[in-house]
Length: 304
Image 1 (cartoon, rainbow, N blue to C red):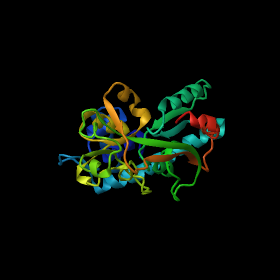
Image 2 (cartoon, rainbow, N blue to C red):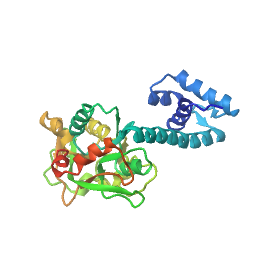
Image 3 (spheres, one colour):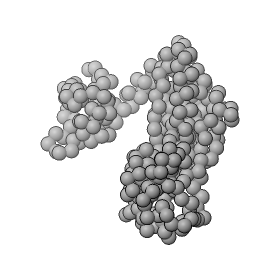
Image 4 (cartoon, rainbow, N blue to C red):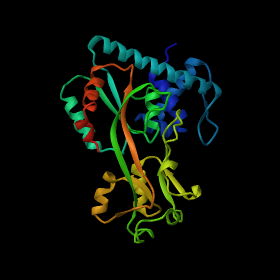
């Protein structure tokens, strides 16, 4: 029996996304390739892995077990390759960096450009997470380095963490929103009359309380719109269907162009403490290259 990694990835993506087409989009392959991969797995395992008679594709009990253990197999496979490469050369095969929209992304990409000029052969993967999803990715070993984690690490995560600084969030709205021309500071009572748009927490495993409700102005959760990330939050705010708290650097150009207004809110602290962190046990020259910079305050301040 030969369980190819590509076949397992197709099954796992189908479970996560709920459809063959969404799994294909995530993997960057065709729907027929996903279907073929799963059928090959079924042939090798001698079991049906998908319920194909429903509008929404779901995994059978056997399929769920295959996806669960397949995830572990892929993790071990990746760890084996990385460890062998690390022992042989000291440079990781891949460095996974979680980066949040709370910080200026152009700084990170400038650093990555400098790193690539070293020609180490290490592939960099940048991952977006929201709120406590940053800690979750580190805990679940989906990331090697986090830049922009909110708050101190939960007790589940054994990390080395360094403060970057504080980031203020501003209440943003379209210029034609009813709140845009009211006298400042706005009160919570005024805000609660309108829909708030929030980015949902991307955490899968850790509940650290760092979800969107912490930064929500609205007490009426039925009037809350939850979107996948801060980029979607900004687009929804621009459409005029609600208001929301965003870091100022994300909306500076929209303020200048007259598309967005920011308003002060009475007695509301919307500042966040941001950290960079990595696992205590992590090793590798690529990780060391980035962390050596992050240990220097002048470099960390570039992100703010």
